[in-house]
Length: 154
Figure 1 (cartoon, rainbow, N blue to C red):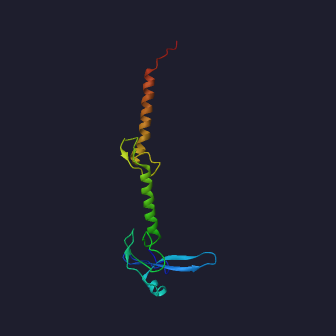
Figure 2: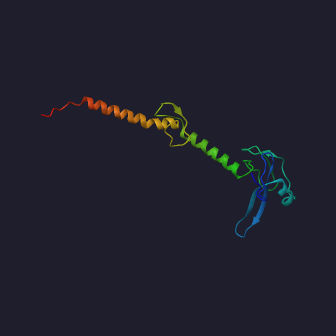
Figure 3: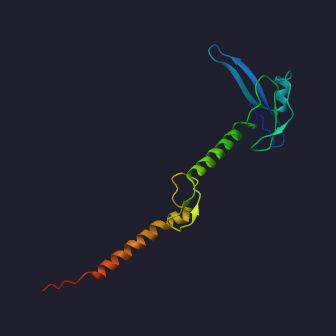
């Protein structure tokens, strides 16, 4: 993780400050939240007040929020990467729950698919399925070949 203001690298145990800064563009005023190191806080946000440190929901890094008019975030994370990781995990779990349990056509075991279009429980079963299909068709061809009457050509 790096500081968004100075770009310095932060260790895993070092706390991250979530500082808000306002900007007043003519058509779109707003607020930006930055992940900032301790040195930048002392330099640029010396006037701000801070809440006690809480752990990030993803990486357990101490996160310190700025006191202000904004509400406390529902998902307390140290930065964009942790937020994306949590959102992706939640989306993956939602897709798995939406799919429900299926039966593998190759081995007949039940499984919960990771993707909505998954048909087999594992790559091994997926690779074995064409072999099983080819084996079945070659046996059927052999059976038909032995059942045919032999025509004598005179």
